[in-house]
Image 1 (cartoon, rainbow, N blue to C red):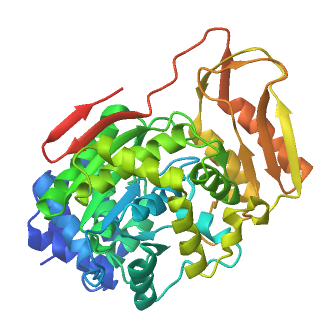
Image 2 (cartoon, rainbow, N blue to C red):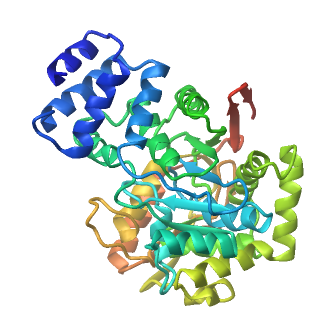
Length: 445
């Protein structure tokens, strides 16, 4: 088999065979230059970006990437294991809320997660803001923890879908990130390799999402559900809004605080609602309930009784962290500078550039520009205002948590520039737009 012939075939818009896709993936996973050089892999990625892939090709690519490394064996954990994945957002702390809540309802959650890069936050970075907590566990520790406390969230092993690591790094520097089959296969190869029995996908749409149009987000959701179905895994994809940050807190320790506030019953709103929606479908896939309404009632019961927060405490303690943060959030990293900013004008919040807000937090030190960048877990901001809200001059607009007054000044300017305020009130955007299953799509909102 010849990589040039494969490139030529896809360049001309022809369908690649399973064997040709397998050759491409093996070359990426093994770094075997006798099979393909990096520039040839890049050429094929660009051909895929321009010509697309059929559903069969995309599934073959996904399964080949899944099988390019280890596939986790979760069979020693009793029950149906359900995973959840978000395509990335700002203030999106749902994992830290729904994973312990779902576990408290009797469904084990064995989750391998990733770090943040760009304008979106990573679950592992948020967890590592908890003093002492480790996201690196052996497979034996990981499985034992899920069996004993029902939930664990750790980093992906280096042997999980190694082909995807190579191809993603090439896509990142060659303007081929925005290819639907490449996005879908990248996400699903890692989810399938993580070993869960079923998967709930949170596909974001809006200014802070990887797919910023609703139709593009729905198309991505359908593609990933199709892959799961062809791979024999039950998958539900829920398209949720990212026209504004999901939670009010943006930044690693701040988002942990936000999750604890939700689990403690102190905070309601969009973050809780989306967590309950995703969690109810996780319970359905696990066979614990028949309808989303029944699942929501189970999760709300776990909230009221405090059993969800207790599971989070147990998870934190098992992973070496200080569980006292769940009772005293001041034990989380604290910023050098904390500044409350007033609106200084009257009007209505009409729109937000969510990506710009995420980049503002990144510039403060809450996110990475390069993978090697060190984070400051204490920094970020609290943004209580939402689209449609009325502002007065003395309305609390944003609270900045920064390393210096100068960085706070820059963050304030960036956040003000990202938020449109005008005289006319607008409707708040929907939290959920669609639910996609193997049986079809239901539009909401």
